[in-house]
Length: 425
Image (cartoon, rainbow, N blue to C red; front, side):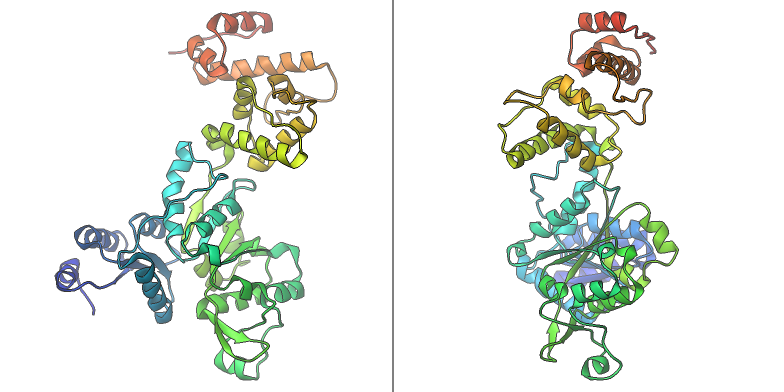
């Protein structure tokens, strides 16, 4: 039935329980109507969005929509989603899914803002774009979203790097067969052919995660968009029509938006991928997460290298948390691999051990190969203490606490290193 207003919809919902599909094309007013319906009756609510309004898509996710559909709308897609949500949630859809993974640290305010979007994405089957710099955990987030669903244990997470193959190889990897011809049953039904050996066939019922999607040839993008639209294809080996319920996700860097504007990504594929967008903050914007992430990496590295477990000292952790990390978690792990590999025995990791491997490429000091470790440490401590004092506006007590030393020790170091002190209220 069609309802012209929230009041009409509420009146009908008081008489019988129905799933609700809300068109968000009118923007904030429609979104507010969806919120009112959810507050009054908490029905199973779905949203239809315009992919050109990612802000409304995100708001729909946070408002508790059970799933979000991008135009053009497929009746079969909507019916399948309703059946799935009713079966999974007993008629009370739209619940957030708990995200639990050892790799996804979210102590920082920046990540706490992202977690509700990730949790809501996990409760749906809509396409997801995870956007962030290299090393910000895009694939970690995609895997967490995939794994959070109750049926994830029976489904595959298939990762494809579109830049690692030429057109023929990517065709073979994704579809297992060349593009459909203009003749034959498959072409007549407008369906793409896939083989049992294809990655799309493997991903059916699960997740297809695409890296460097802007590098995929247009022919491959067109075939993939058609599969995601139809949610079925023709099995190459038998000619039978088969369902292909594949959830698409893509990990993209900040340059993706410009690549799309320049025409390197087909609009129909982008619409399927971008129903939900997760923006991952860089590591330098989530410093509260760095100590836990560093400890996790050290445990993992020690296990891989088969060396006794090592612990990071508090000064070493303070230093690691303060570094710029332009390469994000990839750079952090590489540094810790070097530190652990260079240590003898089972002793812990101290400040000197980290200093021996660190470079401050964006700061006033760059450590080269010359000089002794003591000289390198003195240079670094001078710049580091000055930076912490600047951060705390010259307040000695706060700076000493951040550095993990006593005020008297900080005064002593400032004198010996000739660090200027200028308090600003």
